[in-house]
Each structure stands twice: as structure tokens, then as C-alpha cells.
Length: 209
Image (cartoon, rainbow, N blue to C red; front, side, top):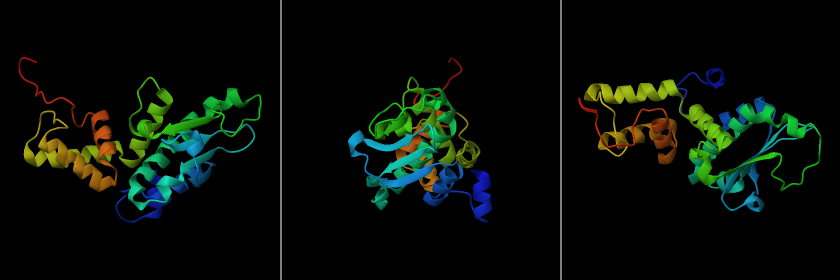
């Protein structure tokens, strides 16, 4: 992703745009329909990655996202999430697709179907969704850049202990991540917690543990 951005920009690498995510998907040999009607899969489905036995995968994004500019951040998050399925799970479907069966349009046997509530923060028992969600966060909010942002905030304020996500400083850090990477509050908070840059606990460490 960084190589792609450096090839297109001379300025800051962030935030990553919708067009850049689209190019990333296309460079990985997948079709993309960003205006798909996914209502047949459920009202809360916002992305679907379809794997085929005899041609390249397809990524479908709900038209509700692409047709509403207020949902631009969610659209980018969903594109990055589906890229996670494309890049990391493609090989896992090989055995299932080896028989070259025909799949019905609504069959779930050859599809990663992604609901709104699991795109950001799936439970780790749903490991494919969890992994795709983690990939989405890593693309939009890379580890090194997030750590630098948190360090730049905490250093001048002498914040050396864990910062609670519910504290004023925690809220400010979340806001900085939202602004820098153009992501939602939920996406920023989940990423910071998963990276250990913020803590969910209000309890500060002491000499006595």
C-alpha cells in the first residue's frame, strides 16, 4: 500500500482515498462493483467477496455506501475490509472450489458476506472476519503512523502511563486519529485499542499492581 501511495503522491500518505483502495483491489486481480444491491443478503450486509473456480474474484459493495457521501469513511473501511478477504483468504477457497461446482447467486458457499457490525470489530472466534477487519485497520491506519501520532500527543504532555479510551486525553487521541486518517470514531477507537495505544480500563497502574 505504501508503495502504491508513494507512486501516486508527493505529499502526505494519509488519508488513503477511495480511488486508491479501488486501484489496490484491481491490482490484485479482482472485479469491483461499488454500486451493488446487496439487499437479498440482508439489510445489514455492506460488502461481499465472491470467489469463483474459473475466474477472478469479485468484490461487491452496497450501493447505500457509494450513493451517500456522508458514508465515505464507511465505504473506505468496507473496501479495505473486502481487500483483506481478497488478499489473505483467496487460497483458503481453493479446495472448496476445486470441484468447480456452479454456485447460486445467494449461496454462501463461495462468499465472504460482511455485515455492518462485524466489519470493524468481529469476535476473534469468527477468525476470517476478525482478520479482514484487522487488515482494514492496518491499511487505513498503519501501525507506525498511529504510534507516531500517539507519541506526538503524549510526549509533550508527559503521559507515560496507559491512557484510558474514556479519558479526556483518550478522546483527544481518538479525535486526532479520526482527523488524520479520515475514519469513523468507532474505527479509530477499535484500532487504538487493538494496538494497545489506549486501554479500555480507567484503572491506572500502581506500585502494588
